[in-house]
Structure formats: C-alpha cells, structure tokens
Image 1 (cartoon, rainbow, N blue to C red):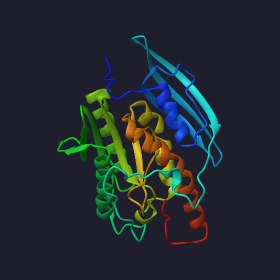
Image 2 (cartoon, rainbow, N blue to C red):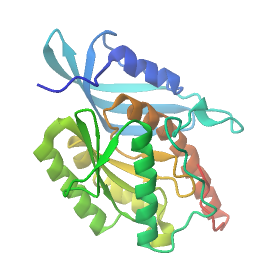
Image 3 (cartoon, rainbow, N blue to C red):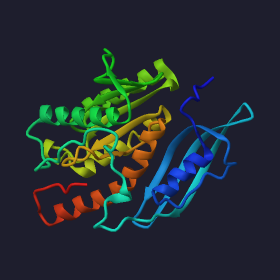
Length: 268
C-alpha cells in the first residue's frame, strides 16, 4: 500500500494549476486522492500548455490508473512583476544572485548545484542526512529524496541517471529521486541543443521510474526548473509547477542572447 500521508486531492492539484495560471484541470471528482502523477509528454508555449499524464487515483480504497490529456491556456506574469508573486526561497534563506552565468570548471558547477538544492530542500523543511548511495540525501518526515549532481549532460550524467533508476527500484515510491544539472551548460562544452537531446532521449525511461531532472538557473540559485517529472511532496510540487512555467521564458531569452552573440546567460 502506498504511503498517502503527503498525498493531494484532485481539488488540491487543480488549485495548484490555477494558482500558477494554468488553465487545465484533472477531470475527476474533487475529493479523490491523487496517489501519483507522471508526465509522459509536455508542450509548453507562450500562451498554452498541453500535457499527457499517467495518473494514479484512490477511489473508495481502490487504486485506479488512467491516462489523461490536458490542454489549456497559460496566463503569463507581466515582465515587470515578480513571477507569480512566488518566492522560491520564502521558507528559508535566499541565496545571493551570481554576477556571471558561466562556470570555470565542473567542480565549481557541482558546488553551486549542491548549495542551490540544499537551500531549496531546507526551505521546505527537509533535513540533510548522510547516505552512501547518493550525492545528497534529505528527509521530510518518513519520505526521502535521493539526489545526484552532474555538471553537464554527458555519459557520466547518464550513469548517474541509471543509478537513480536502480535506487527507485530498490527503495520504491516512498522517496523522490532527482538528477540536478546546470540549466545551461555551454561554458562546460554542452550546447542547449545537445542538452535537450540528451534529456529527450531519456525522458520516457526516467519518467517511468519517477526520476526527475532539474536544472539550476546559472545566475539565480533560487530558481530550479523541472525537465521531467515533479517530486510528490506538496510544497515542492507547487514550486516546480511555478518554475516550469518560467523556464520557457528563460530559455527563449537564452536563445535570443546567443543569436545576438551575447556572452551572458540571462538570469531567470
């Protein structure tokens, strides 16, 4: 039986969608429990979002599985407003913004990723613990989060992703699993197109095993973008719903800046 202590209802999930300006809703009774949600396909544009979900729900003690295609409008914040009025680090200490967006080497990148993700988890009440099977391990009540870091999407990152899949098979659904990388890796030799091809080539397998890939903004460590599935803890779910919507704007700014030959990666 799955641990439902942190589960959300259909009403909770739909409220999270509305709060983030997403015009989509799960088409089920509001009081049903959402046990698990997997993003199988997702297309996010400036004005709309389309997503195919694999949903597990609890109805009168029975577990139901369904595929759900949702499509709706997206309400974007004005550019001079703080996106969503949402502070990613509101619950903890906000990290300082970097004055550059590149990395001198992989060691600097890994240290930056670790600091950012530790801050995020700490802000939502996680306790950092030692675990020999992960680069970072944190717990919130009875639920754990296994994290591995990679400076770029390469063969080493692929090995770490496979390791996280093995951990998911071993420790099952009572934990979350994530590979954390820089949002943009060009200074370390991986272009955005190569990075996205790496992710797309593995998205089905990673999503099937509930392994998330998260990109830390190169300038603002308080913004971390989800590239595959979301964690199941409510606070983090709401956080990543927000930053997922912000990612498209950040990515577009980056592409435009590279087209102009600019040397900086724009902050989120």
